[in-house]
Image (tube, rainbow, N blue to C red; front, side, top):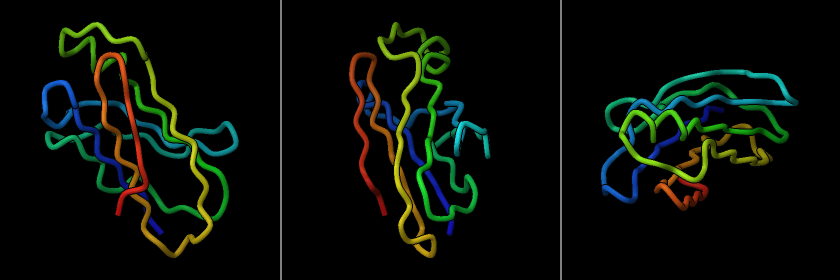
Length: 104
């Protein structure tokens, strides 16, 4: 099924717009997108079973917002075991920390 993501700037308490995101599989780029004004990419593609990587270009976001960040990119690797389910991978971001979880 499909994949979506949502990036929130935890330092400002606001969505993180214009964050470049790419989906990778086996070292190849499968899809690319940029978060919208609400910090979301609503559809990044369909997933089959296996290991995937979401790469967030946080350096570009920090530069655009005048922040100095420690992490120039965040890579979230995850495993799809049920391709029929929707997968949502949120990212909570600040200049010196980040966290992620399996969303719904």
